[in-house]
Image (cartoon, rainbow, N blue to C red):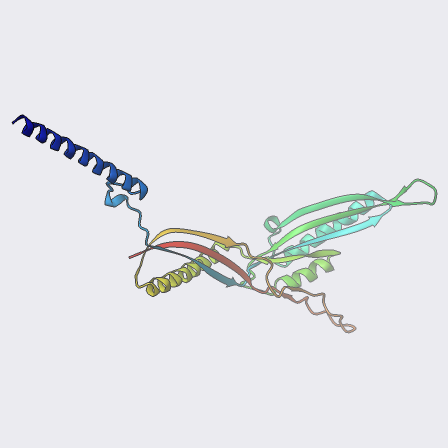
Length: 262
Protein backbone atom coordinates (compact mmCIF):
# COMPACT_ATOMS: atom_id res chain seq x y z
CA UNK A 1 0.00 0.00 0.00
CA UNK A 2 2.79 2.32 0.95
CA UNK A 3 4.62 1.49 -2.29
CA UNK A 4 1.51 2.36 -4.29
CA UNK A 5 1.21 5.73 -2.58
CA UNK A 6 4.85 6.49 -3.28
CA UNK A 7 4.35 5.56 -6.91
CA UNK A 8 1.32 7.83 -7.20
CA UNK A 9 3.21 10.75 -5.68
CA UNK A 10 6.12 10.19 -8.06
CA UNK A 11 3.74 10.13 -11.02
CA UNK A 12 2.12 13.40 -9.94
CA UNK A 13 5.52 15.03 -9.52
CA UNK A 14 6.54 13.88 -13.00
CA UNK A 15 3.33 15.28 -14.46
CA UNK A 16 3.92 18.67 -12.83
CA UNK A 17 7.47 18.81 -14.22
CA UNK A 18 6.19 17.86 -17.65
CA UNK A 19 3.59 20.63 -17.59
CA UNK A 20 6.18 23.19 -16.46
CA UNK A 21 8.58 22.10 -19.18
CA UNK A 22 5.87 22.33 -21.80
CA UNK A 23 4.92 25.81 -20.64
CA UNK A 24 8.54 26.97 -20.75
CA UNK A 25 8.85 25.51 -24.21
CA UNK A 26 5.80 27.44 -25.42
CA UNK A 27 7.10 30.66 -23.91
CA UNK A 28 10.49 30.13 -25.52
CA UNK A 29 8.94 29.54 -28.92
CA UNK A 30 6.76 32.59 -28.50
CA UNK A 31 9.77 34.74 -27.70
CA UNK A 32 11.83 33.36 -30.57
CA UNK A 33 9.07 34.13 -33.08
CA UNK A 34 8.24 37.49 -31.47
CA UNK A 35 4.60 36.61 -31.27
CA UNK A 36 1.98 38.23 -29.07
CA UNK A 37 -0.15 35.79 -27.15
CA UNK A 38 -3.40 37.81 -27.19
CA UNK A 39 -4.35 40.48 -29.70
CA UNK A 40 -7.46 42.56 -30.13
CA UNK A 41 -8.53 42.41 -33.80
CA UNK A 42 -9.08 46.19 -33.83
CA UNK A 43 -5.44 46.81 -32.88
CA UNK A 44 -3.94 44.88 -35.79
CA UNK A 45 -2.66 47.35 -38.43
CA UNK A 46 -3.85 46.87 -42.00
CA UNK A 47 -0.78 45.78 -43.98
CA UNK A 48 -2.57 45.76 -47.32
CA UNK A 49 -1.77 49.20 -48.72
CA UNK A 50 -0.46 50.77 -51.91
CA UNK A 51 1.48 54.07 -52.07
CA UNK A 52 1.54 56.18 -55.24
CA UNK A 53 2.38 59.68 -56.37
CA UNK A 54 0.58 61.89 -58.86
CA UNK A 55 1.34 65.06 -60.78
CA UNK A 56 -1.07 67.72 -61.98
CA UNK A 57 -0.30 70.77 -64.12
CA UNK A 58 -2.52 73.79 -64.67
CA UNK A 59 -1.49 76.04 -67.57
CA UNK A 60 -3.14 79.45 -67.45
CA UNK A 61 -2.64 82.73 -69.24
CA UNK A 62 -1.35 85.32 -66.73
CA UNK A 63 -3.64 88.19 -65.81
CA UNK A 64 -1.12 90.62 -64.38
CA UNK A 65 2.29 92.04 -65.25
CA UNK A 66 4.97 93.75 -63.20
CA UNK A 67 7.88 95.87 -64.33
CA UNK A 68 10.22 98.57 -63.08
CA UNK A 69 10.43 102.03 -64.58
CA UNK A 70 12.73 104.86 -63.60
CA UNK A 71 14.58 107.96 -64.54
CA UNK A 72 18.21 108.90 -63.99
CA UNK A 73 19.80 112.31 -64.55
CA UNK A 74 23.22 113.79 -63.97
CA UNK A 75 24.49 117.35 -63.63
CA UNK A 76 26.75 119.68 -61.73
CA UNK A 77 24.08 121.21 -59.50
CA UNK A 78 22.42 118.73 -57.17
CA UNK A 79 19.26 120.80 -56.67
CA UNK A 80 18.73 121.14 -60.39
CA UNK A 81 19.25 117.44 -61.00
CA UNK A 82 16.83 116.50 -58.23
CA UNK A 83 14.26 118.90 -59.64
CA UNK A 84 14.59 117.40 -63.12
CA UNK A 85 14.16 113.86 -61.76
CA UNK A 86 11.12 114.90 -59.73
CA UNK A 87 9.40 116.49 -62.74
CA UNK A 88 10.14 113.51 -64.97
CA UNK A 89 8.90 111.09 -62.30
CA UNK A 90 5.63 113.01 -62.03
CA UNK A 91 5.25 112.86 -65.81
CA UNK A 92 5.91 109.11 -65.76
CA UNK A 93 3.29 108.55 -63.07
CA UNK A 94 0.79 110.62 -65.05
CA UNK A 95 1.46 108.48 -68.14
CA UNK A 96 0.93 105.32 -66.11
CA UNK A 97 -2.37 106.62 -64.77
CA UNK A 98 -3.45 107.68 -68.25
CA UNK A 99 -3.06 104.06 -69.38
CA UNK A 100 -5.55 102.79 -66.80
CA UNK A 101 -3.31 101.83 -63.87
CA UNK A 102 -4.43 102.69 -60.34
CA UNK A 103 -1.33 104.66 -59.33
CA UNK A 104 -2.33 104.78 -55.64
CA UNK A 105 -2.53 100.99 -55.45
CA UNK A 106 -0.19 99.66 -58.12
CA UNK A 107 2.72 102.10 -58.29
CA UNK A 108 5.33 102.00 -55.56
CA UNK A 109 8.72 103.66 -55.21
CA UNK A 110 11.35 100.94 -54.99
CA UNK A 111 14.50 103.04 -55.03
CA UNK A 112 15.82 106.58 -54.83
CA UNK A 113 19.55 107.27 -55.01
CA UNK A 114 21.81 110.31 -54.99
CA UNK A 115 25.45 109.69 -55.88
CA UNK A 116 28.38 112.08 -56.36
CA UNK A 117 30.27 111.95 -59.65
CA UNK A 118 34.04 112.24 -59.33
CA UNK A 119 36.79 113.46 -61.58
CA UNK A 120 40.24 111.99 -61.12
CA UNK A 121 42.92 114.55 -62.03
CA UNK A 122 46.35 113.13 -62.55
CA UNK A 123 48.44 113.13 -59.37
CA UNK A 124 45.63 114.82 -57.44
CA UNK A 125 42.87 113.75 -55.09
CA UNK A 126 39.47 112.97 -56.65
CA UNK A 127 37.09 115.91 -56.82
CA UNK A 128 33.29 115.98 -57.09
CA UNK A 129 32.29 117.20 -60.52
CA UNK A 130 28.55 116.62 -60.27
CA UNK A 131 25.74 114.41 -59.03
CA UNK A 132 23.69 111.52 -60.34
CA UNK A 133 20.10 111.09 -59.14
CA UNK A 134 17.87 108.09 -59.88
CA UNK A 135 14.27 107.29 -58.99
CA UNK A 136 12.74 103.84 -59.63
CA UNK A 137 9.11 102.71 -59.49
CA UNK A 138 7.53 99.26 -59.36
CA UNK A 139 4.40 99.06 -61.52
CA UNK A 140 1.69 96.36 -61.51
CA UNK A 141 -0.68 96.05 -64.48
CA UNK A 142 -3.86 94.06 -63.83
CA UNK A 143 -6.72 92.56 -65.85
CA UNK A 144 -4.57 91.29 -68.72
CA UNK A 145 -7.20 88.59 -69.19
CA UNK A 146 -9.53 91.37 -70.36
CA UNK A 147 -6.96 93.22 -72.46
CA UNK A 148 -3.66 91.47 -73.18
CA UNK A 149 -2.37 94.49 -75.11
CA UNK A 150 -2.20 96.88 -72.15
CA UNK A 151 1.52 96.52 -71.39
CA UNK A 152 3.04 97.62 -74.71
CA UNK A 153 1.31 101.03 -74.94
CA UNK A 154 2.04 101.60 -71.26
CA UNK A 155 5.76 101.08 -71.78
CA UNK A 156 5.73 103.40 -74.76
CA UNK A 157 3.90 106.00 -72.68
CA UNK A 158 6.42 106.01 -69.82
CA UNK A 159 9.36 106.21 -72.23
CA UNK A 160 7.73 109.17 -73.98
CA UNK A 161 7.26 110.80 -70.55
CA UNK A 162 10.99 110.66 -69.86
CA UNK A 163 11.75 107.21 -68.43
CA UNK A 164 15.22 106.03 -69.38
CA UNK A 165 15.33 102.85 -67.32
CA UNK A 166 12.63 100.24 -68.00
CA UNK A 167 12.89 96.50 -67.41
CA UNK A 168 12.34 93.44 -65.19
CA UNK A 169 9.04 92.53 -66.86
CA UNK A 170 7.36 89.51 -65.27
CA UNK A 171 3.90 87.98 -65.61
CA UNK A 172 1.84 86.21 -62.98
CA UNK A 173 -1.56 85.35 -61.56
CA UNK A 174 -3.65 87.54 -59.30
CA UNK A 175 -5.28 84.42 -57.79
CA UNK A 176 -2.68 81.62 -57.74
CA UNK A 177 -4.89 79.48 -55.45
CA UNK A 178 -7.33 78.95 -58.32
CA UNK A 179 -4.57 77.46 -60.47
CA UNK A 180 -3.34 75.40 -57.49
CA UNK A 181 -6.78 73.86 -57.03
CA UNK A 182 -7.00 72.86 -60.68
CA UNK A 183 -3.50 71.32 -60.60
CA UNK A 184 -4.23 69.54 -57.31
CA UNK A 185 -7.40 67.95 -58.69
CA UNK A 186 -5.46 66.70 -61.70
CA UNK A 187 -2.74 65.32 -59.44
CA UNK A 188 -5.31 63.42 -57.34
CA UNK A 189 -6.86 61.94 -60.48
CA UNK A 190 -3.43 60.92 -61.74
CA UNK A 191 -2.53 59.23 -58.44
CA UNK A 192 -5.87 57.41 -58.18
CA UNK A 193 -5.52 56.05 -61.72
CA UNK A 194 -2.10 54.65 -60.86
CA UNK A 195 -3.37 53.09 -57.61
CA UNK A 196 -6.37 51.47 -59.31
CA UNK A 197 -4.13 49.99 -62.00
CA UNK A 198 -1.79 48.53 -59.38
CA UNK A 199 -4.69 47.14 -57.32
CA UNK A 200 -6.23 45.49 -60.38
CA UNK A 201 -2.90 43.98 -61.38
CA UNK A 202 -2.58 42.57 -57.87
CA UNK A 203 -6.03 40.98 -57.97
CA UNK A 204 -7.60 43.27 -55.37
CA UNK A 205 -9.64 46.46 -55.11
CA UNK A 206 -8.71 49.96 -54.04
CA UNK A 207 -9.91 51.08 -50.62
CA UNK A 208 -9.97 54.37 -48.75
CA UNK A 209 -7.25 57.01 -48.62
CA UNK A 210 -5.04 56.53 -45.55
CA UNK A 211 -2.54 59.36 -45.95
CA UNK A 212 -2.13 62.18 -48.46
CA UNK A 213 0.35 65.05 -48.84
CA UNK A 214 0.99 67.57 -51.58
CA UNK A 215 3.65 69.96 -52.81
CA UNK A 216 3.15 72.99 -55.02
CA UNK A 217 5.97 73.97 -57.36
CA UNK A 218 6.18 77.74 -57.68
CA UNK A 219 5.93 78.76 -61.33
CA UNK A 220 8.90 80.42 -62.93
CA UNK A 221 8.85 83.11 -65.55
CA UNK A 222 6.29 82.45 -68.28
CA UNK A 223 7.41 81.22 -71.66
CA UNK A 224 7.55 83.44 -74.72
CA UNK A 225 7.99 86.69 -72.85
CA UNK A 226 9.02 89.41 -75.28
CA UNK A 227 9.72 93.05 -74.59
CA UNK A 228 11.06 94.36 -77.87
CA UNK A 229 11.74 98.01 -78.61
CA UNK A 230 9.50 99.69 -81.11
CA UNK A 231 10.66 99.40 -84.67
CA UNK A 232 12.09 102.48 -86.36
CA UNK A 233 9.33 104.50 -88.00
CA UNK A 234 9.29 106.08 -91.36
CA UNK A 235 9.63 109.86 -91.52
CA UNK A 236 6.46 111.57 -90.36
CA UNK A 237 4.75 108.38 -89.14
CA UNK A 238 4.16 107.19 -85.58
CA UNK A 239 6.12 104.22 -84.27
CA UNK A 240 4.08 101.04 -83.78
CA UNK A 241 3.39 100.02 -80.15
CA UNK A 242 5.99 97.88 -78.43
CA UNK A 243 4.95 94.21 -78.78
CA UNK A 244 4.62 92.35 -75.46
CA UNK A 245 3.80 88.63 -75.31
CA UNK A 246 2.75 87.32 -71.90
CA UNK A 247 3.02 83.62 -72.73
CA UNK A 248 1.55 81.12 -70.25
CA UNK A 249 2.09 80.36 -66.58
CA UNK A 250 2.19 76.73 -65.43
CA UNK A 251 1.50 75.63 -61.84
CA UNK A 252 2.52 72.08 -60.85
CA UNK A 253 1.23 70.15 -57.84
CA UNK A 254 2.63 66.78 -56.73
CA UNK A 255 0.72 64.48 -54.32
CA UNK A 256 1.75 61.37 -52.38
CA UNK A 257 -1.16 59.10 -51.40
CA UNK A 258 -1.42 55.82 -49.51
CA UNK A 259 -4.57 53.75 -50.14
CA UNK A 260 -5.83 50.69 -48.31
CA UNK A 261 -6.54 47.53 -50.34
CA UNK A 262 -9.75 45.59 -49.89
